[in-house]
Length: 338
Ligand SMILES: O=C(O)C(=O)CO
Image (cartoon, rainbow, N blue to C red; front, side):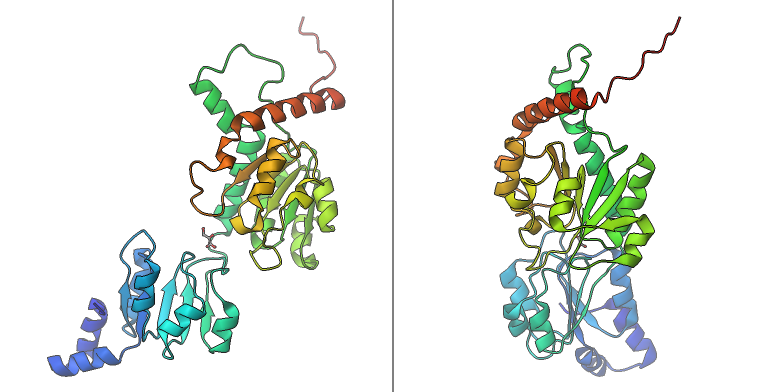
């Protein structure tokens, strides 16, 4: 049912009216469809504005497409989240009243911007609300992957933790490393700021164009896509999903990366060719991957990427030993205690 209790109350206060007049006033308020249960604070803004009537899909699960197509009919506004494809079909279903679409998300790859533009529909989104949390999550994933925390937990729980061994689960060091950022924006900068105290040697980035203002904040060097692949010990993918970036992390990239490289994706699953990632991980082209996003989401529990633990573990262990010995990373001059 289309209503806003506070809006109704406010309307009554502003313009006391008969029930019939009141309902007439309500029916002229612009209609907004909210496609998901949004946090109460956000909803209060709509409710208290007294300027709209709205209906919300009151669930934590996405509104089924068929239902959505029915519900948006005649709407003036849509407040959606990233699970709703706002495309030509939906805009046709909404009809000519639709004036504004607002998405509670940083990414907007679920919106057909061309179709929206063509119809003169304004678009709002919520940039920056996630910068800190995505940066923190990226660092968490990067450390958990490079320090092999998931494997270590598994070994501890399943009895694989035997005696102390010199190189077992050693992982990869951020100190003295080169961190590559694919797509430098607010989030990329926030990630670099957090990683810097780990004594990273160098930040590099690649993007469709140079971003000197952002790059200066973290002293990052602009490099070509191939250079970034070759130089990065850690690669954080932070780009938006666009037709240009779709599947950009594929065998072409992985085959140029270092064998000890750690790949982290907190942008969108669509930027990665997952078959290629599976191949890269299972054949030891790269050392490990930490994924916050996949295609589809959630990834089916039987997906090959979930089977990689052993294969990945062995590959990583061999590479780790090789590097450690080659670089004599763990051998320091002997210090006498007594
Ligand atoms: O807001 C976004 O774009 C997100 O990915 C939220 O997880």
